[in-house]
Length: 195
Length: 195
Image (cartoon, rainbow over all chains, first blue to last red; front, top):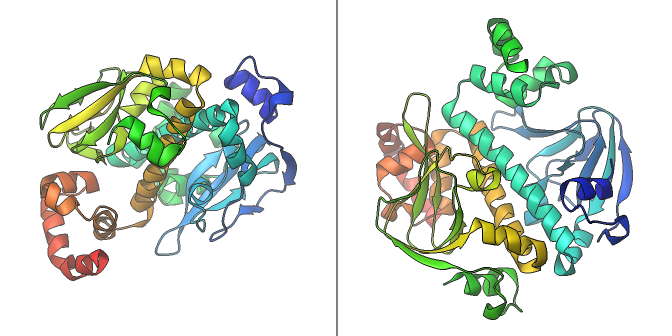
């Protein structure tokens, strides 16, 4: 699915491809490539046609944590950097080979001036990113690592097959050994969540 | 400042009050009033003309945590509930007496269909809410309670005078006694942050 098809399906059922208010460019990246590095200023928004990407962050002890995974048919970039035009404090990396459609930020900013579709698309996508962040914040404030693991599996049932245990542990903010223990303890609950 | 003035100042310098694409209603609430309760479905977005409001959440042990403070000249509501039309899992309460301008969600949804300003306003406000959430998530993943306290003071220097220590502790996710200790240890650093 490309951006035009995504808009037609999720944003406006009357949308025509010829009305797309910005140009897009295809990019193919291999697994493990850096799409936006630490301290770089993000200049694009990407639509993930296929593959998985992730946002890494380093804490004061230089440990890497994963703040986000991005899946097919969703938008991503170092969004705070893009919005504030400041150096990125996350690193965006392709978790698998990815097929991306890139939209240049400057072009998008120009589109906001005259296009309802550009404003509507980014409003709705940001609302959905916001909901994801709120969910994650509440999880940190109110849930144990075990509960957060069970929620992750429930919301993304395919995550176990597509990501390694080390990545999932970094996303949950725990040690891989703790995650292995949690997984042993929760096998039956995972089955219940998935059915 | 009212919503029209806010749009003129922050969203579109050519905006005229007569172009406001939705009606607004004034509401005056006393300190401690519940604006949107747990399990209620949020039906409004509020613009805070004056005062402070907060979003509470309960963890599995029935302890209250504060997930957000809202200050003058900003928008707030139980936003996830509004977006998903599902029962609110936060409680929105006035921290002080508040003067609010309310916009009905249904009216806003209709405005999105034809108005660039409605889409642009909510896009920009949601982008700003998103940045706030990202900052907070990174703080939980990478910073100690002491570092988070110093950041809070830096970003909201007036918070010490306007909120009690119990509320600040609930926002940082720590015990009031721990916060008192942190405050004793960081007096000189707070002074440095504020100058």
